[in-house]
Image (cartoon, rainbow, N blue to C red):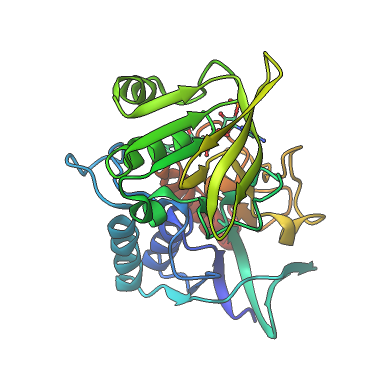
Length: 307
Ligand code: NAP
């Protein structure tokens, strides 16, 4: 006899949605979360493209609302319980978290992704001393200073727009001369008077004493180096899926995202994946929520034997 009908691993929008659906369907569900229910969405200062909130909502408030809703349906949430391993032996799916073991008829993996690092000199040394991966968490420390954001995607531009309201000056350092970010964010950033784009440029080193003081920049087209004085640098160069604990169990793509079918089913029977961890084109809260619902419904049908 399994401990639970369903175990959800990860407490971001995908995992919490899956938990709302399975708990509401009277499936005994455990959600394991390495921190508190959060996910990357928790960090967002203002979410404007999640339907139902015409004035926008903070990531923190949205996740708190998801959590309250899940708890109302009886979802058992165990926080600060990072999962080390998943084992499947015959029909038993076991989740191992430190010295704890839990079994379930179906698993839903919703562990999301984490920020990439640049891997350059000074990055480790000044982490937390002027280097940040979360503008909404740390932006307030840089009031009226010059800061840099590295990257050209949605995160970089959102971070830069957020920082432009706090910092005196924001440099966006991008390795190409074209942005990957949505057009609406591009337009907003290009119009912001205290945002300056530094095109075709990479950061070779982060320098300082007690904290960050300068960035060693290289224009890759002109092969020219220069130093830029900043009080802080926000690194927004994409993310890496948190899939190490299922490597060798479910099939991953070349970037280590979990491959699923249209029901969010992985290549292992009874194991589903939802949200940013899944191989897909659009990683948003709305698509994570959709995945959570799909995975929950598929898990329910799997348990009933009708999938
Ligand atoms: P991303 O879309 O993968 O963009 C990463 C950026 O960093 C790219 O511009 C990339 O340059 C650059 N980069 C990568 N490695 C680099 C390196 N080693 N050195 C310098 N630059 C490097 O990542 P993201 O912006 O974090 O977004 C991730 C996902 O979340 C996306 O699907 C995005 O749409 C979504 N997202 C959505 C919202 C929203 O809708 N409000 C907000 C945030 C994120 P290249 O362009 O040259 O590859």
